[in-house]
Length: 308
Image 1 (tube, one colour):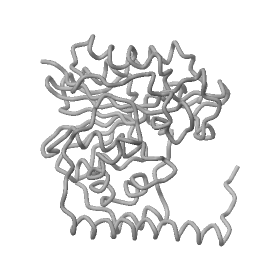
Image 2 (image 1 turned 135 degrees about the vertical axis):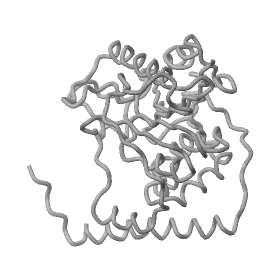
Image 3 (image 1 turned 180 degrees about the vertical axis):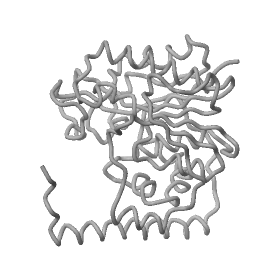
Image 4 (image 1 turned 30 degrees about the vertical axis):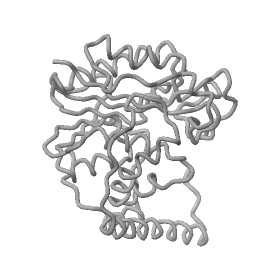
């Protein structure tokens, strides 16, 4: 069924929003040129999302918001409550110099962070499914972004499953996967729900592959979602779930299982968790940790170094 034709009011609203983002990017660049500061990294890498961490990532937020419409939007989105600032800012805080890095980003979707990495001098490869679950931008917004966005060095895109990466062992200095593995609850492209035990098995495959293609002394950075499903009752992100059918709440890892699924799993496979592990599942009870999805939903970050 064809999508309904937008009304004139909807078209004007869309155009105004796009131009507002473009104005925001230009304004952010002017502000960045006038203010030279970088907050030293005193933020944990292996931890749960907390809004109280965001002031420590303000320099990273300001850096990213100047790049293009997409990054300006998510770095300033009130709806997202700073979760993307936490995810992206923690990564920037961990990488002092992007020049010459061989980077693999798994499950890029519509994110332009890989373009920013390339702009900073990295050689970037991205992996997505042959039929991506999310469409990239297009139309007027893409045309305006083409005028406003910084010119990046480009990236090499590869169509593949993240459970079977088509790369040799140790091919990348940095492997990233941002807000992707929570979608393992959906079998694509048929969008059938995947039972939890099978999700866990597929997650192990993804983590094993990410470690395999990370070079010795290289790093693997991942973010994802967690939830206390025993207490959560609603999810603001529910209309965007990938699967058809299935349980009313999903798209996140049970908070009680996170340490075993992620941090312990990588440590057992010869990785060092940079700076130790500060993730505490009890933190999900604190509203400071709640993400835009609602009470008892949060996010997490993980940074591991592959030992030689």
